[in-house]
Image (cartoon, rainbow, N blue to C red; front, side, top):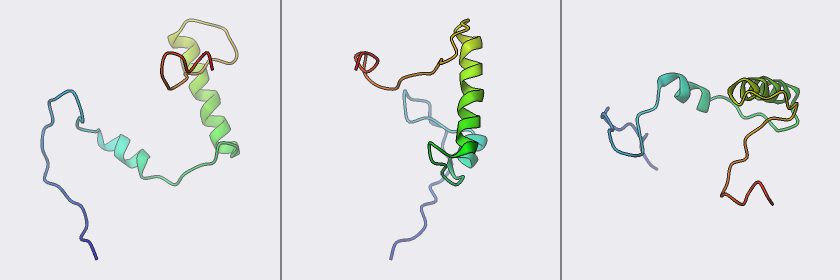
Length: 74
């Protein structure tokens, strides 16, 4: 019905969208994991450990909340 989307390579230099590193594209094309999958839990624990380093905290539950400024309050 529709052909494959294969745009020519362009260097995008605006505020967005921007070019994506091939490693990111590969990660985005991987199979999905559910939030309760043991593999996902491992990834989340690794990510929280990295956030603790970035934010210089020892808080066990360190994670980012995506949303508006009020999202953390809700």
